[in-house]
Image 1 (spheres, rainbow over the protein chains, first blue to last red):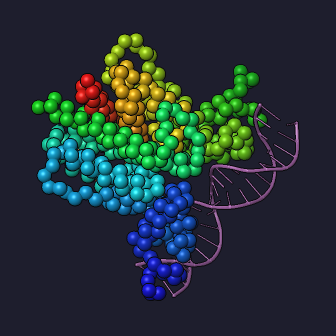
Image 2 (image 1 turned 45 degrees about the vertical axis):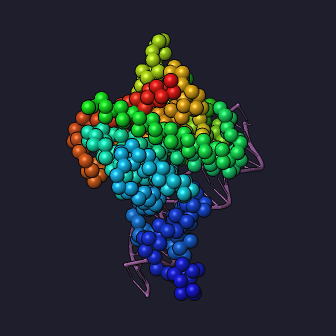
Length: 210
Length: 210
DNA sequence: ACCTGAACACCGTTCAAGT
DNA sequence: ACCTGAACACCGTTCAAGT
């Protein structure tokens, strides 16, 4: 018990993995704005400069955090399914993964925009689309479209969640359900609808090319 | 001539409009990272604290900058066109507007994600889609899908432009055209393709509902 | 109506040196 | 292999006071 590495012992030595673990904890509990190098260092009982032994800079660290969030999106490869179902399953799994950490979408969005990280999210979409045996250019552009929609939708969604929890009064354009559960259902529906639009569009594309 | 307000005279008094003008100039010449309150103040020959008379905080200022970038997207309302053409025209106009300022997409993306700004971009898509007389929920979800795709695609695109200009070697996944012009064409094509996917999907939706 | 001056409470990053 | 100590060059924001 008392020998556990995760206890409050000081002057523990750390690995990259420990640093990312601690970063994820700060992210989830306090949000991206509070995820500073200095704060991260202090939760690890270490000087800020120590972090630069593990990571070249903050962006690289955030890319590693992003990779871990995305990697959380498990989908058991259910063997035989059509590309459309596969894409839908990946989209939901990735959305769930992003939603499972505070500001998760924003972290992944910015790492993705900077071209950092392992690109697993794009890879997942690409693999699912590949089941449809499209032209390679179509496959690439479609995967990017799914990913852009996913990140844009979920980051907006998480932003609204945070605004709500702070009781911010946003000028109520359109209907705004009062009940949180109802709102969550609405978000998921509009996400699914966007995914459906893209899938339907890609299906049409395959008929055109035929 | 020498009485012109935009000359190098000091201790000029400024309006919100002047501040946004100056911010846009810094954005375009030096990028978002260099658009700090202190730097902005110094180009206006003013103390940083003076900016807080015009804007509540930096995010609000950036939202005003975002609004101006989006407002640059002119499309003459060509009278009678179908919703699909109207959406395509808006998408291209908005992309051009974002591309006309360095880091334009990122600025608009983050203001949009924070729910700040006037929401003109979403309004433009919504108005175009409305020509198709869809269900209101469909209209809203589709407009959001177009906007998310737009912002995601263009911010990624601008990121690559900047990486290229810095000579960064990104692990060449897939074919990477060497010639800049060719690459620009590829970007525009994959943007148009994404827009086409969404339009085709929405067209199918209208048949289903019929 | 618009700005100054001074301060507060922070940042990310570098680098020689330690163990 | 991993970290300290100290420094550098910055940030956004507040607020009393000035004109």
